Length: 436
Ligand code: PMP
Image 1 (spheres, rainbow, N blue to C red):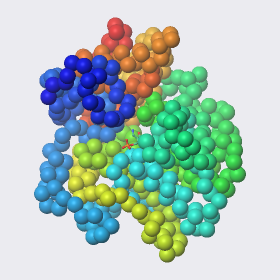
Image 2 (tube, helix red, strand yellow):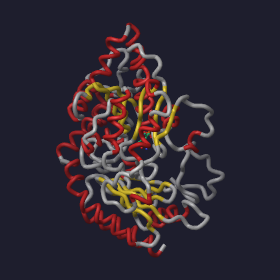
Image 3 (cartoon, protein in one colour):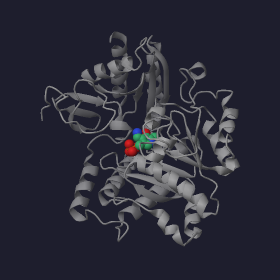
Image 4 (cartoon, rainbow, N blue to C red):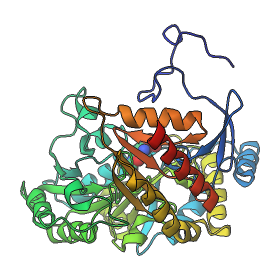
């Protein structure tokens, strides 16, 4: 494969957010911690693909499971007849999640999981006879995918601006990270004093008996790794309980070991009512997502009405055999190799390593938790995002894949990494930031 000289003349795949200006960075293959580019260069993966290849690339066990499934039963629509895969996988997920988070709705992506979770929350109140709960609460700088629901509750105004009114009745909580108070905190930052009251003020901006659900990423990823202050998620849980609002955790990034526990709900010890997952569920080898609901929510549907079954409208590929096979093999690897414990064990080393970048003059904040980190750069005067973008380009040239959002660098390596990979990442990034 060779790219034409002029990209203008090249028919581009129609996906937004291409993070390159001159030439796309095309990969030919990948193994464990590394990609190999089409021109044969090895690149250390500092982003686990896109926060998802938690077990490292091209794992044999997953590849074999997919191939074997494809040769045995390629597809059986869940609506008509189904196959054992979703039953086995749902049970496994229910065992992994705490408490009574036991009922699983399979999707094909994080965006579908978010939209499904919002729909389940809205419908839940209705089947219980409370049609007035129609409002939703998201958070500034929250990212919840690109479905209509996800961009409505998402806290990125530019993502909403071309699409008219989207979902009505959405408020956004303030985001959690305040550079003045929280800069360079290791692990979870302190609680910004005003935040506790501010949260209740926003939740009660409109009559709280009209609010169906509140959705947050326990740690916001795509918008720059925003770590919640100690007590923040607990506060959201208690406000939701107080006002009868369902709490949805979007664990598309935090799920499957990123924080050193299976899920953020374990890490923070806070129980949501619904959890949206995707990415790491199949190690990204095949698209899949899921929404996991507490028993009470599922039961409400079942007892709700004769039409309850209509509310469970799924996707053609919900619980696809290949995705189920990939997910089971992925969960086996996580378990057999103890990858969540491994992430937890490496987290202190990771913390010290990424915080060593704090001494660079261009770095204005470093944030970390589990095996994720955000490194915020001082924007170049009059040129927002350019410094981080240039850094990403240089890193890639020198063999490291990082991700950037504005002037924030995000790192989220596969959980199989070794300490020497951490050293390599931080040394290379430090040298690029120092010398350009
Ligand atoms: N929620 C969160 C927290 C995400 O990070 C993402 C993707 N980065 C999504 C939802 C959307 O997932 P997908 O791209 O699979 O639709």
